[in-house]
Length: 291
Image 1 (cartoon, rainbow, N blue to C red):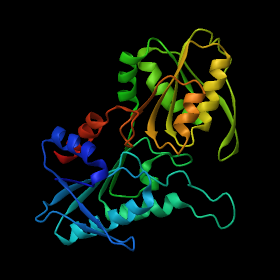
Image 2 (image 1 turned 90 degrees about the vertical axis):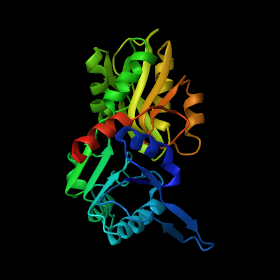
Image 3 (image 1 turned 60 degrees about the horizontal axis):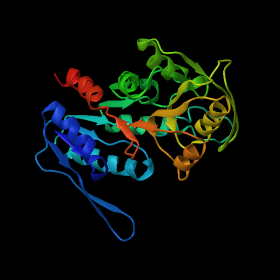
């Protein structure tokens, strides 16, 4: 059985249909003081999947704790978390005395609740394997790049794929290489949370179609600066393709003002730009485990 919350009921239902299994809703009631009461279906099976993407994570983590512990009390033997977006992965080291390494703490928190954790393109830097960050019995990070490459085949004509910084090269390369597309990355200098400097690679961009590609867009500042730089080079068009559309307030307007034509995202995080489904990707991985 798949359990889900109302915010991701549609995605969970599509996954349940693909796996030919029931999908049930965890009911939430919020008290005036902000506390929440959860109600799970009764008579849960021995194996349960909880589907919840962990954007805006703080309250969701408490709800995961309540739901997972309650499921165990009902006799569930194996709990699987499907979290297409996995939170708190960026802070993997303390840069200053006293800084909390949130990846280590939240990763252990999740691993203590679930036997298996499945996610997509986690934002890992110095940690190279998900199990190092989330030490569950099984922890698997899938790549959205095959689905993104398939999407571009029908939505872009021979574009140049451009990553906004060196960290994005792994995703840009994985999307570009199967179809022999040209790709490159920019050089980024971060000056603050919302201030960056972008330098384009030495490529003739004139009259070319460019797709800016990254794993996460939050403030949108980096992608916007890259788009402006491309427009200044005389490109024919600039589109954006991203795995996790976190989009802080104002980010979409920033991209539009920078001359971005289309913004496409996977449905890892629910957003109006969702254009690439991850159901097949997640379903294939779960099917291999469940059977």
